[in-house]
Length: 122
Image 1 (cartoon, rainbow, N blue to C red):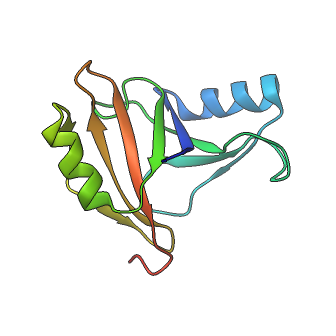
Image 2: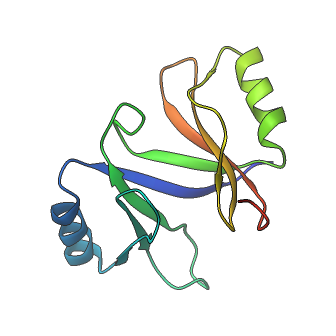
């Protein structure tokens, strides 16, 4: 079984969104050090139930909140997604030190991410 491991909230104004979620929920939000404008969100202690996520720039891939699902093999999951009427929206990409991910669309038009964890990803 694959579990939801991450969420992304799209924003037109990143600073406004960061301030909103920090104030409303008390979330810890820090800018990611990578090449894109992406803010990592910690929603609580690791000992508490729930997942962490991010605030991402709103675009064609991020039109609404996106959940990312952990999969044992991104290539096998992408194959099953295509075979069952879904769509893979972009080639898989490495998230250095974390794994490989891509965005997909289900037959109902909902966008979601899939990630294969691999600390050796570059």
